[in-house]
Length: 121
Image (cartoon, rainbow, N blue to C red; front, side):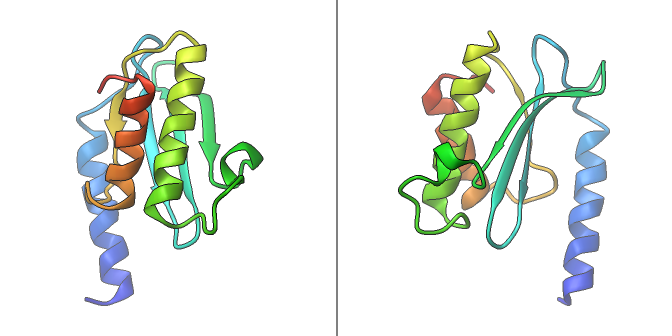
């Protein structure tokens, strides 16, 4: 499968998923994006169309002690950090948006980290 085909397939999956899920103020959407070197997570309120908070492997608090931002350990650390930030905002439940990526590897590690921090999906 060529790179262009992979990206288009992910975009189709993303659109199909986004039609079905929506975040609110009380239960925001936890959306994830991954690149080769980094992983990003944001809490989004779709009713007001605003980002409540976000974190990535580029943040200094997450980077401490990591060799690379593109592995499962980094993803788990980002998940734990977004979970702590959400609990600080009074958010305990989220809707998980894997953004068209397969629920495997770094995406799964991030979700597990967020669950361990106390978020419910």
